[in-house]
Image 1 (tube, one colour):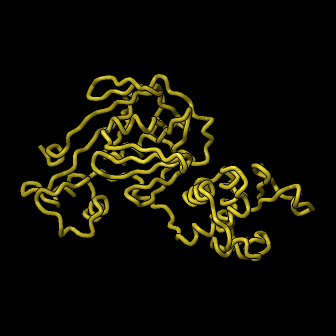
Image 2 (cartoon, helix red, strand yellow):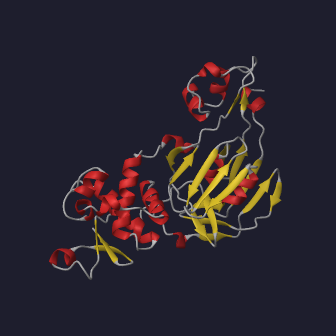
Image 3 (cartoon, rainbow, N blue to C red):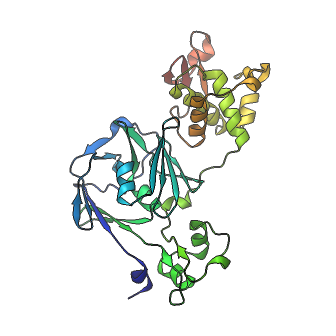
Length: 333
């Protein structure tokens, strides 16, 4: 029996979906949640026994999503919490890891670090749905697609325990990882503290290869302030759109490349020059919108202008290609 067989204690969950490889194709974070469909024929088996879903699984762009409460329960999470203000689900896993999923936000927080998923969670009928593959990996499980049975097979994995018989080098080799990756996964600076009896998390979530672009607290506060001044009276969606216009500009070669320079250059944002920006006190909705925008939630992709058509008139504004109308503002390329 090899090391991996000794260390692994597996539970199999078979999620059977008719004629669909639900884990293969990526999902754009901008995909409309209205396209999500209930998967009535999804069957979950735990330890060989069928589990009745209190809420159905859903598919979106050939990806399988499950209610966060269900997947957390299946993997025996210690705690699941809901942040109503920020529309976030927080999970404390059985192994003590912390996960934060945001509605429509492709970035997930894992033990405080930020990573980009290729499928964003969404809320349907008052429940948050999360991508099965990412959720399972973060909950320390492996995921495999069984083509013959047309099933997604998830296996929970027990932490590896270092011992004289199973040293660190054997664990690294058995799980096909590296010492550096194990250190990152277990939040260790070096291997000096790894001794006999040390339990190591060994499942490497695929998102570890996709760290999110960092941002500074100064960038966050500045983005929130300009959003408050320009759209504090608008809905969250309108605030998110304004924040994204600034971020879209920072990615566009026609404009400065930083949030600060975008805001303070030119005449698009008068509050940056008349003192209103400095006095702004962002509310909770604006703070959420700015943070979500920095974490990749974008409802006006490509838009680098916004304007109130009742105020901004003339050939320049009328010549723009409007991509969205939210509240009092039009958003244009």
